[in-house]
Length: 264
Image (cartoon, rainbow, N blue to C red; front, side, top):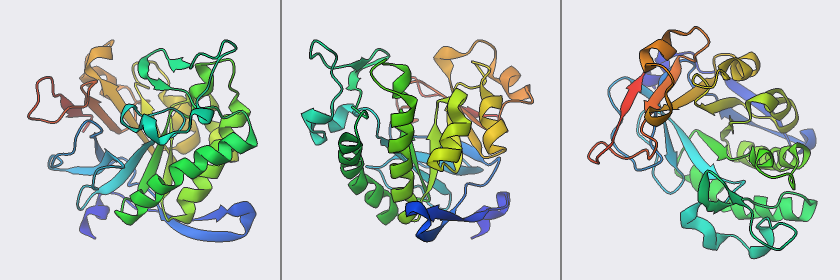
């Protein structure tokens, strides 16, 4: 399809299920212009080659489409989908909440049984993404272990590995979301194909992703978090070419507060 001529598309054979089977996944077009549309789907601007949308939406047409799943914390609209036994609780029995997102509860990744149950809950959403013809999936909040001492990197890597295997088996490439300091570990031990960062230019973290994934890094900056003009961040050679500026609420163009810009 003509739109892939924006950048060479690499097709990789991913080893799955302890090396017992393989499937082909399509990697994102490196450096393509991107839009991040989790707050509502709308027609991409001219020249956009990649779009991220929630798994409940349909993929954008004639672009590389990435499917969003909140898989290490509860999504506010999907809380009922999660068994109470999978919600992380502290010693007093209180739910452990993401301090930055008070309507999201951390999931309990500490045991093999709970990780399997989490993956089983996410599995229908992975299937949904593949059935709708998304090209890739983004598993959000895999860095939940940085928000609670009850969780560990090892356990989150173990869950991530299972999710990546299931997504690869469905024919989807998989993006690491956040956790820049552990990017090498997530790529080598969980098998992520590319990365989606949030505010890596603002927080001087972009190199942590590009050192591992090269040009296959998408970055989202937010208007309410900029520490320098967006154009200045774009001029930084460490800022990924596929960087988009969005409003924090990720609203659609017909809503107040909508913001969108890219580095090219």
